Amino acid sequence: MSPSGSVLIVDDELRSRESLQRVLADEFDVLCAQNTHEAEAILAGDLVQVILCDQRMPGETGVDFLRRARETWPDPVRIIISGFSESEDIIAGVNEAGIYQYITKPWHPERLIECVRDAVKLYRMQKEPGGLGADAKPSHDTLNRVLSERRRDQRRMFEFDRIVHEPDGPMGETMALARRATRYDISVLITGASGAGKELLARAIHFGSARGDKPFVVENCGALPDELLESELFGCKKGAYTGAYQDRIGLFELADGGTIFLDEVGETSPAFQVKLLRVLQEREIRPLGATRSRKVDVRVISATNRDLEVEVGEGRFRRDLFYRLNAFPIHLPSLSERPDDIPAIAVSLLAEVNRAFRRKVPGFAAETMTLLRGHCWPGNIRELRNEIQRMVAMSDDDAPLGPQLLSRGVVAGGAPASNGADSGALKDQVEALERALIARALDELDGNISRAAERLGLSRVGLRAKIERYDLRKDLSEGQAP
Image 1 (cartoon, rainbow, N blue to C red):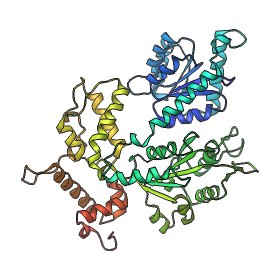
Image 2 (image 1 turned 135 degrees about the vertical axis):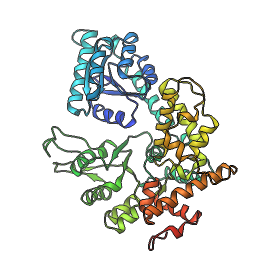
Image 3 (image 1 turned 30 degrees about the vertical axis):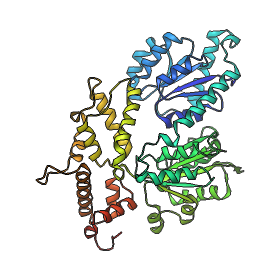
Image 4 (image 1 turned 45 degrees about the horizontal axis):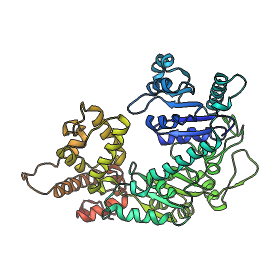
């Protein structure tokens, strides 16, 4: 066990947990829980000195959980992380939950570390003045056992078998390629619409590979300006730029031996692409403000919702970087391209929501499932998950979810317009609706495939295939034919 203490992070957002863990792991033993059930199981092992809990979680707020935890496990020092808008709720629950301190978002890494240090000191003072008593300190072997179990659980969580799909459907080829990618230490580029599950597939590739026991770190390349992105990925020295208050270890160095996932890599600027290319070529990074480079052994999996071949042709993305990233391309179909998968995915997502919300909703009414299957889901699986969460929150009992709980957009999108005939197979009706939506998008956008694909939540390749399938070539403007 680290002499600096042990910390339990409770947060339902995977990236938030990983961000907190990266900041704290150099100094503390860090355990993570994605919900309160996992947190309680960890606390039962008496391994935790500090609980760091997010306030906004599905089913139960952080304050409510810490209030319950205090009754059963009074010793760990409790810290809550919240947004400014939640401060009044936090303050109201401080006394009942025995919260030591709350940290507002966005939190500062140095202040977070200092807060956890103070919390560990308080824990030790409470247990035994002058230091932590032997009876309160978990054994090194016990902690290692728990950490090993957590790593095994994580690998199981991201197994390929957990990605719901019909083997003979559009996802079958994608999954076969992804499984093959685990065998070789090669760069992978995952393309697909936003919300289609590119990060989930990247995690499955990592945890199924020989690097599965090593770190997997994530960065959204479209979320930060160049200087901050460079600092985040390659690290920086104190004073390298305004706001660099301390040395920072970059994600490439943290991922040494493992995998880094560069999401939305197509959003990077040409200037940053040069720096990224150098790292991939030389296999070394130089932190901002540093004079020496450091060797790193990292596998790169990147993802984009853009057509990078078009971006290269139009001069927005470097051709040499594209070839480096695209050594093993995998296209992830959007949800509208795999309607046969929607029922199974919906059932799987409902099970997740039931666990998070502590509900027992048994399933979907038949009409509800028909409408879910008929909707085009421009937001893909992310949109479907949000819709199911909303339906469960709106339902008053644990009965199958009826169509009256669906949002208006899903009802309208899942109900094909009447053409005077009430009969016809569901598949035919869905295809008629899909053809009409694509034709309308092409008409409104003057046959521009790239813009139509973006509006419909499809890849450009996927849209071209549907244009051929539905014989819509006549709807394309001159020069836009697939």
